[in-house]
Image (cartoon, rainbow, N blue to C red):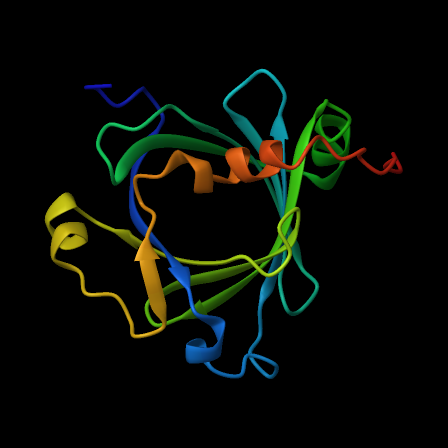
Length: 168
């Protein structure tokens, strides 16, 4: 893709697998719980983020496809809880992870579908900053260009879990 679709922003990020032992004890570190639903047959993602204070943010997003290994146009629409609950009825595959803000990036530890999988990611303002970034000591292999570690691939690779009925 050579152009950025209208109303989208370029997301430039790099990602790595993590050695959790080297990351240190996270038991006292605040985190956000992120529940994603990747809508079947589309590039759409429904997200609920619950902060340490219990406050929830609801988003409906679209990723348009990679422009380069590290960049991709994305668009997000913020939702009310009622709108989120309505869209959560759509068929799709789900993930659940804890996100810790640390070392200038985000450490995601999956609870499902791949419990214990840990991925560190950093977003950048431009491709040059992404290219020259030196990651922290606790990362292992870079997975930035590996689609098998995208959220949608992780959710689909382990079947389509039955989604719990949601109250309306």
